[in-house]
Length: 480
Image (cartoon, rainbow, N blue to C red; front, side, top):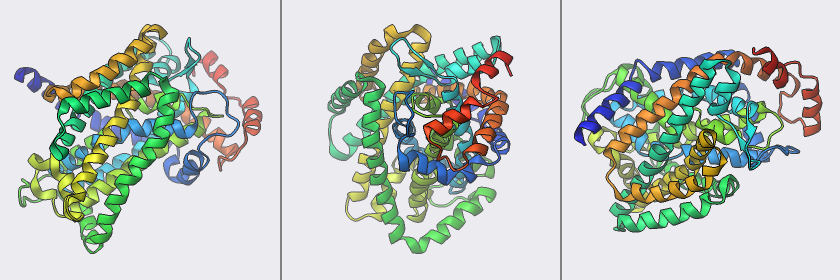
């Protein structure tokens, strides 16, 4: 077993190292930002109004979820242990400067998230039960003609189906059970049974059940956590300027050894900032496109912009809160060995009594369980793509039961395996995003030229689409 863990760790380190995914993710985000003319900066306000203000695209009929439900389902899958433990790990190894590189990754990642969500809606299909199905497993094959598209689509589908049981299931249950046992003394098997029952209740109902639960649950859990962090930052407001200065300076100079911290280089800050940033917001991995494809929307651009706000909320709000609390309270220099408890220590330092510790434990449980719900749907759509509709219900049941396994069994190897599977998901998707970037840029420019404020009604969008020279039929026929 130790040999397996070592091999998996080496594979994961290579995939997420400075020569494979990190440059590919960064360059793809920069390329898409350029081709889309900084869409994440110039349309963010309108995108937030469309997804959170309206909560649904008025008049849209084709889809299983409202735009807000699709957003919260994707947020459920991404706002997880990476926002608490992942941020602490990045800072514990790369120093405070890693937070800066998480911000950079998030800002450029918004363009990647927009692109994959656009393509998810653009190339979605309807399965045998009448539900929408889309994501990289479809747009890679349908958008990229020939054997390359088929290979990339199949590669992604298999990797995502496997990853769902790792990072989207067992590791999340393990984190919940471990933290609840440490904070409240509840045996792991009890937590496992409770989580399994809740998962079964939600997942057997399918995507509409998941959408209803996440629409109610996800905003509450994010507000709960952010309010605790904001209170700590307000109490330590005098230390905030120095903390921000430390984040920016260490991003370009590295961090000297101090306390339990062994020091870091600029490369470590970049590597762990980018890797943990992607682990947190999943931009470029393609997973969020699966949820976006289920949305009721009148045009792919509109859902792409709504989905883009997911990365903003995840990284620029939740991750920022965690990182700044860790830095301002001064607990960041305990080093890598203390990363698992670093966020809890920071909240305990900033809040009276044991409140901080309990807030982090409860937030981690909510974040991780919501990740189980979101990834259950991602895995389901991949299984449906591979084997058809007949295995969907058995998959939902098995996925729920595996949560119990995650809660009760040591998972050191599974963590490394999950990291590797996540990386293998991202590789075909990023290649596809680059190849299809011309299509996305062309149709995005055309749509926003007619509806720059995203306020068109369904009838207006239909009228616009009727005269759209670059529609999907034209694209399918020409193969461009």
